[in-house]
Image 1 (cartoon, rainbow, N blue to C red):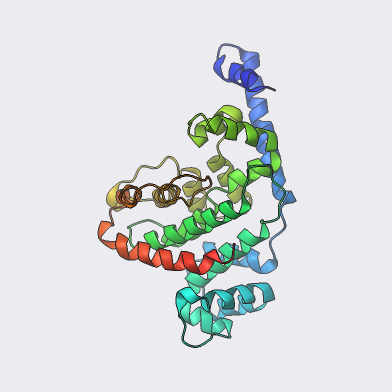
Image 2: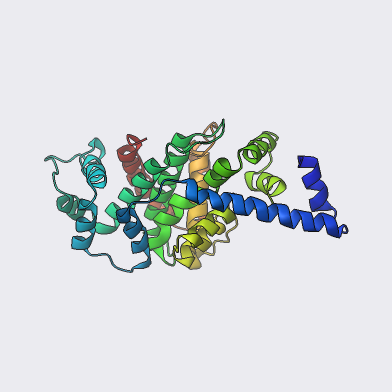
Length: 304
């Protein structure tokens, strides 16, 4: 089906047959995209348990260390991270339990999960124009920044900010894997200056954010995280009543403006980028947050 055919179906509301075909086409695209989940390398048992831990309000020090120590690759990631130059440790850290005590249970869980998932998907076959490096770096920096912002902004379920940031654009990967021709069409439309989600709606009838939410539902990720991912391009910040969608949306916009988005673009002026975080109403805290963010980005950049 050509792009013009798709537009005819979408615009001809009086043509019942056309409307029916649009619905069928939309359903087919969703089915193909979600079906590609089976083509991704499976999570290890340890990663599955780390992901499941986001549904728990508390994760104990001992359990987290014990869980990570069961996976030699994860253990290597942890020790490499905690001994990186960015954290400037005077003495080498040689045990996971010591690393947990230094970084904290939740931060270490987040970073290990983020780095592991990013590397897990790094070799999946994707169409020309797709960059695993940019996708992975954007995902984990969005997760890191959202987590730091959530520690200062009055947001419900702040512990979900990291995983929501990490997987907010997962639908883009599903489109690239399962629908490479349509992915190319979306990129071509974007060159005209149209917004990405508008291009996705025109070609697919669904956005990457909605596909991300459906994938997270399949993984039984908490509903609050699903909702944040689905609405990160369509949030309404209200000061003292923020939700996770605002946190993810602002972090995503800031990264895109500073050149850490999915596409190569000229970074905005620092003042312009920082203004994108103003809806969170934590302006006094932003300099310290962004300094800490820069330190953590330096620590994780070597993994990509």
